[in-house]
Length: 134
Image (cartoon, rainbow, N blue to C red; front, side, top):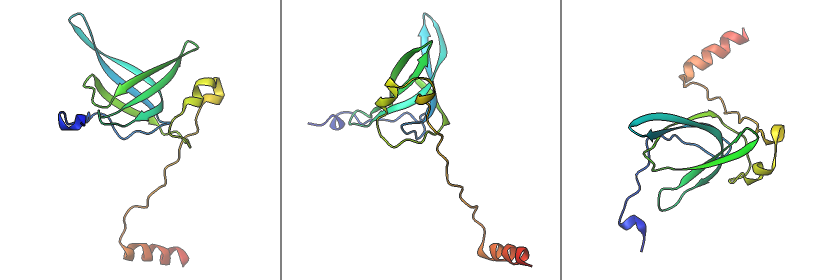
């Protein structure tokens, strides 16, 4: 039997496309007594797990010299917003090796996105090349 037969997973629309190595800021709705507030957790995505239940992602940060990891389900309604701050350049799917690194070694290079030329009609591109060659 499969869980999907009983419950269809619904992804949270507030979570954008993220990948391991990205630095994200997760905003969580926390309830304290009768008050609600947003609590932010900023760190590096070290693991993404996709499964029948919708999956989850783990974010790691270092707070006062102690590594703190927190796992957030993709279906969670308490996750209000996920903001991608940086795209890290990594070559692995699971970044568990970051746990044993400290300080500068734990930093990841920023991934450079390829610049896509804006869609210009062919005639305009030819005219520009002719003007520059003259």
